[in-house]
Length: 96
Image (cartoon, rainbow, N blue to C red; front, top):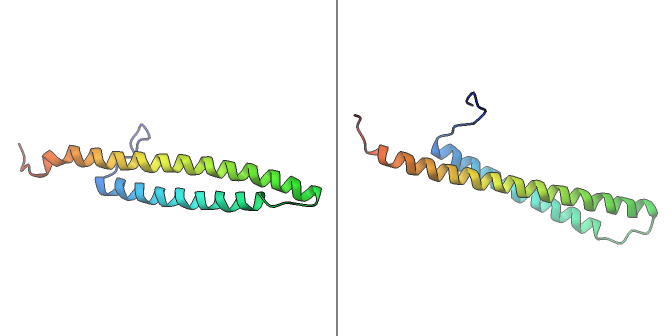
């Protein structure tokens, strides 16, 4: 990590990070989907209805987190592509 708090990754590491983040986003989306399905059930008791409302709110929050993680994955992929493009002309270079 640099002094400004920016992490500098080699191209392959940035691409790997993007892939791992995308998998995490998909897992979060699956959790959101399952929680939403439970929240959609009809609950007979007041406590059950309260839980349903709570769970729907949590499912929404998990969905928002999944979107942010997916955005981070896309940014890591862009970073990897830009690093690859910037390093491309240097790859065949033998020095000054």
